[in-house]
Image (spheres, rainbow, N blue to C red):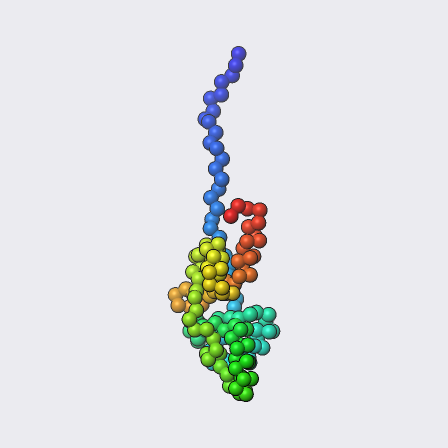
Length: 153
């Protein structure tokens, strides 16, 4: 005599949907920032001391004013030497990039990677409600990719 199975048919196990990996998951929130009225010499010192290549410039309200990088500082050094001018009075606001592209913290990390490729930038600030809340760098994108190794993209 054969036994009949009266149990309900088993559902195929569905692969769980992966949550998107967001910029906000990998952005740096504890940032070294600069003020527009700081000296470029002070910026150079802090870039070297903290081993960073650039950082956002904010006002007293925490609003993004620009970005200053090693390249901006090198340009100032070169101009200062060319015109035989001391750098002691040189301010960040005169040498920072003012037209800054930002990235939304809710952007998918892989879309952000594509934006890095298209723009040739090394970092993007993240602004919410007019205030700087973080920054994502190319290195942060690489960290996200390493954390995903072995998984399907």
